[in-house]
Image 1 (cartoon, rainbow over the protein chains, first blue to last red):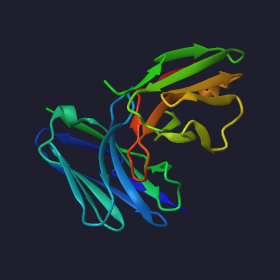
Image 2: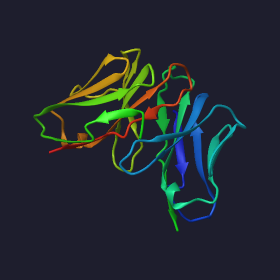
Image 3: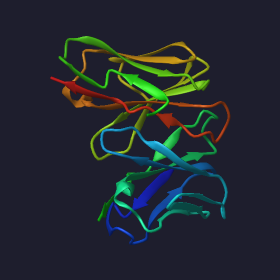
Image 4: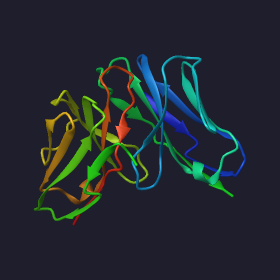
Length: 113
Length: 113
């Protein structure tokens, strides 16, 4: 059975204190791995898609990496506006082309000034 | 602001009421999705429409009835809901093709009295 596990559940950082979030997955062939951020009362906002092991994507203070078993979201020198819940989702090769996503439970990040 | 627009933002209804949620996108996406999200949980897929045809129903109770009148519009008709149906209902859309990210609206916060 496909599984997506995110850790830690919650992370409290001081402004400028870099850290990493983990998303480990077990799927019968990976079609794609997606990172989203979600603010309270809002819908998930798309950040990155990763397709194959070794791939990296960057956007401002965020960098996502992918191996055959897990993905990391690195937050470099975070600011309070980076506070959000970060969701990881995978699309398995067995799903149809319209993208049945399986989400992890998310990591809630709080960055204090 | 997101490019997927959902109305209303909030809805309170009794268990005997009939109401509808509306979702609109003008990005030319040909796949549209309904998700349900409970507090502190990830989104759960309910329905997928591909080229205005229902392609996935995740065993959702019949009191939820989706409709896709055209490629830009997605509705979710609600009837005889239960208190446990109170949640954030999210709509998403994605372009044609595999590995395309889903883009979410900000949801409708539904409360069942």
